[in-house]
Image (cartoon, rainbow, N blue to C red; front, side, top):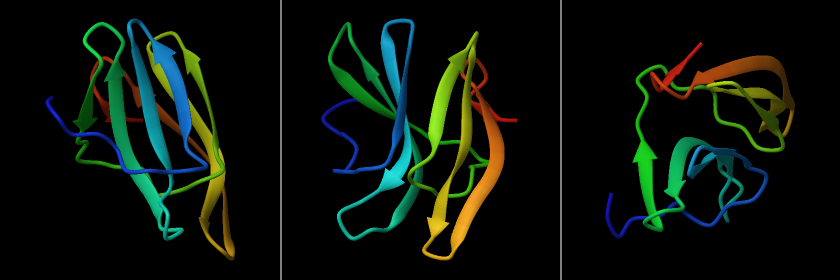
Length: 98
C-alpha cells in the first residue's frame, strides 16, 4: 500500500466487504479492458492492488455481487465482438479466482 491508486476507469464493478471496497476490471480511457483488482480501505483511505496468479479474463460492463466471503462476477464484454457469458467467483479470504 502507499501512494498508488487504480487508473481512471468505467464499466467496472465494486463491492463493499468489511471495511473495504473491492474494485474489479472495467475499461480505461483508451477503451482497453482491465482485469485488475484494487482494494480501498475505508479506515486508512489507502488503495492496494491485489495480484492474483490465475487472473480472470479482462472485461467491462459486467455485474458483481457479494455473497459471504466471495465476489461473484457475471458476464461483461471482453472485446467489441466478444460478449462474455461466464461466472467467476473471487474468494476474498484466499484472493483466488474459482
